[in-house]
Image 1 (cartoon, rainbow, N blue to C red):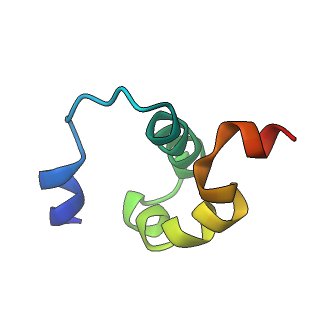
Image 2: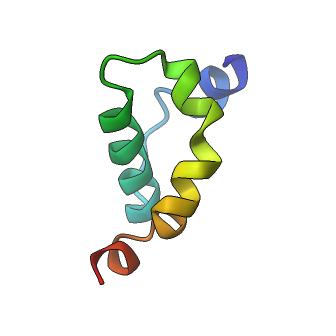
Image 3: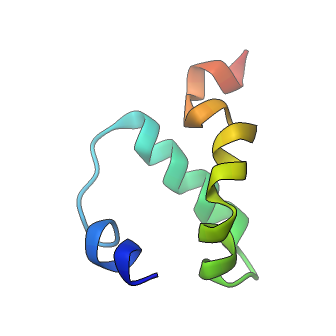
Length: 58
């Protein structure tokens, strides 16, 4: 969690794929612990085709 805080949280993002990743993870987090979502991040990455919006849209 500390690594996420120090390296990701609050850092401006301009990459579409990374923005999509954060959108998916934030949506999944509603009502859950953020740590729970971070632990399942790789499963979300697989389910959402490496967070590629174009691939998910097909």
